[in-house]
Image (cartoon, rainbow, N blue to C red; front, side):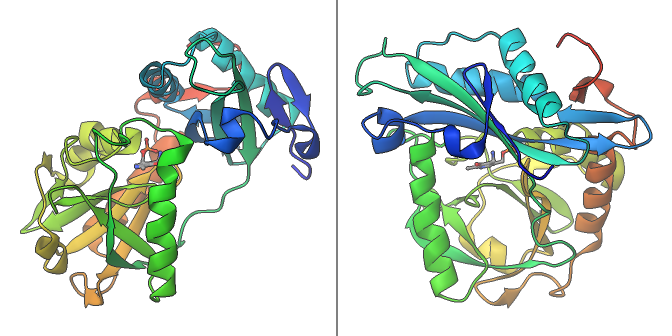
Length: 307
Ligand code: PMP
């Protein structure tokens, strides 16, 4: 997978040829919506499984709707595009994909044409085997009536960029953002779960978070099955972070990423906790298909199937 090609509007192009015009809204205002997902290579099956592909397509469509993009693609078109970029690059290892729908014209006209590209890339696990040192950011999560985080548009990520660069300047790995009422929201590209008084707790979808597909996977399957804990959705106070037993981020890119300190308070013992460890192992086995439960969540990208 040396030189990965980008799929752009039906063509597989070398990276340097997949370019956008500088006067497009896509470039100037970051007028795009996107999905980030992983596909996992299962050597035993000789198959590359894209995790919850249909859910990512559905969320891309929701983002396009909220942005009033014209939507020229159905799920079959999107699936064929994903298949084309993976097969075209002969990908036989884990890969992370960005699917990006963008606006070419000036961007204030709902009928302006959109394009689509898919960028496959290697992406190692975040903080493999280690926990992150996080801070609570003084940057507030953008809110639902400003730039909604439920909508996955590129411009939203300026909020996370400000918070990340501040966190790094202050000597932390990653920020945790609070919502408009000062309650815990999420990380910059990941949802947050904490263990508090023996219960798994996560902010609600009205706390300015993305409706995370990984969060849903943990709630629907992994947490109740593996650690016997239902995930409680409720508002979380900042100070609860300081006294939580465990904390971790989850997301398609972040998978399960432990947090071992917040504002320099150790989370629990300051080591990766037992609940986080068990959830990590179970999640990774599920996405790769070593755990064969929920085959409907793993779309084989080499075998011919319909979504
Ligand atoms: N929040 C934000 C802002 C994100 O960008 C992501 C990554 N898509 C997540 C949460 C996690 O969402 P998912 O589990 O669907 O990848």
